[in-house]
Figure 1 (cartoon, helix red, strand yellow):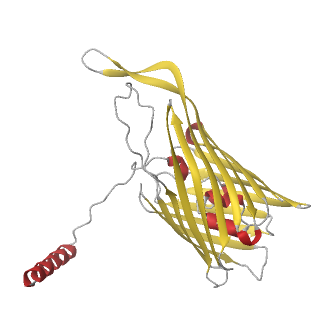
Figure 2: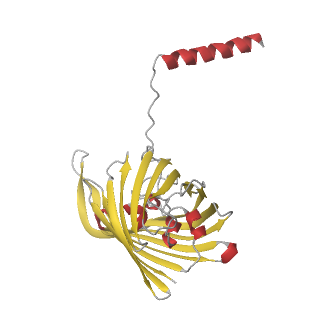
Figure 3: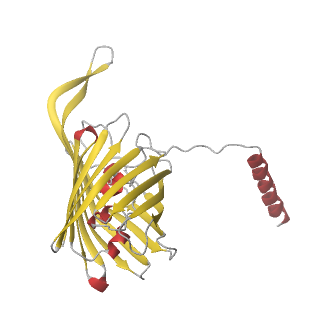
Length: 332
């Protein structure tokens, strides 16, 4: 026992000495260690315009299913949202979300996401004398597409706490190869009781490892397991200039994100609301490779027993391109 104790003490001392000598930890680069990257794209222009934050719950709509599903617990009316954008490299991204409250039984939502890569020219490597190869365009084309179909459920546990989750069937296909999987999201939303201060935790994109199927001799490689892009977020939001239910206020949201295939990131978003009819938004994304500034606007216009909405977002991707996002909504 004395020997074991002495060894343990020695190990602790060695660790302490090396720690005090300022030995830097080894940086671990996690980029490129997962697939299913389309799950990271936020299709909601409102969330996207506010720096990509998920904690956008006041005056929320069915698009909360794409972010933090716990927010759906605060929705009761039937709400339909259609979203569209031209993603990077002229990739077409469309999505649809429908939510409906069931009274004391909670709220359910259905969601659909489609990412269409369009036609892509086929290029092969042709052998040359001396063992070299050169790229050759064959004149043929191939296509690729990603798909996600989900169902969400959320419920108010108390007047301050709501819980929610998603389950989605996901599928990817490219050039005759494909794979399918299931993904799961969970989130919470908690009002602290300190004015409008609320907190949120979201865990996204849980699922099993998968691999592309459709192996052919042309690939000359066995399928490789592809991991899910796991993501954990913690956010805090507060409404400024909100006087006893006034419909004019400024919301500020800050979220931290930890992911399995990249460095930690911070999203900051703001939204100024005028009479809960006009929404001006802006945000910034910190520690991203190319993403940075975001901004947008929204309009909510009541017509009888209905409410029509329109939202727009602009995302700056630096050297890549700029992305324009649109959504149209109808609340009964």
